[in-house]
Length: 347
Image (cartoon, rainbow, N blue to C red; front, side):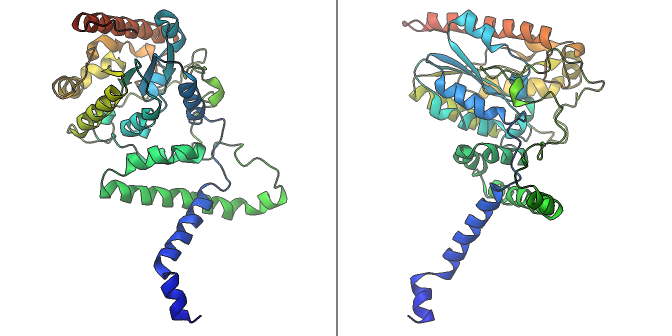
């Protein structure tokens, strides 16, 4: 067979592209691997809990304000329903957080969306942090792809983020290949290679079966707390979350489920300093979401001492108070909704 015939049978460009894609995937999932005991690795257990939960169930969707700020066991005991806390990090972006729960929504479920305010000022589609997800849980690739495939720019971001991971791994191998070849049995995920700044107590093992992080409850708070609101993001509200949220609520209704929206907790001082931005989000949601917004931001304000290390992370006592408020708001909404519908609405 001539070279020309071979080229006709196996077009050069598609074959080269296919080999390049396989090469990239091989490097992505080759050592060093993401630390399976890290805080972010909790997504594996959260999805296991979501798959096993019986309907009707209550699923909380959002970022770390949920992970470090909710007592799901108490909510489950009070409502008689399974409760799953899917919150991990706002850096994943709300679009991904909604995508990852879609396949597990069933009739009579209640989805409680509690996003951080940054999602309305430029982080709706997440950041490069999202690349950590498929490295820990390859089955999340379709959800991650849908979070990136929203515009040509975001697809370009995906390319640059992939290059970033591959560059990191290549750099690691250049520095540590001899050490690994000398001791091939050493665990390459022993250190938190992709998030070295995570505190020692922020581990996968410090999550409950329902998805609540509890590693900070008996720990001494750090001297400095991160109280910067929407730091480095756009000063103007991004209107795109309304369409994403309404589309998700419409999908949930086709599954026989309901969606409600609640604000995250904030320190009072942060609220006072950024009241305009917070209230802009609240009014935007009231006017543009076609599902219930069941609480105002002022209801979830706490003292600065109630936060562990960030403006969204509550300590033990405040965590319980917030859980009580969440329960009251969910029950109040159920009572109002049941008066509007002939059939009983369970929570």
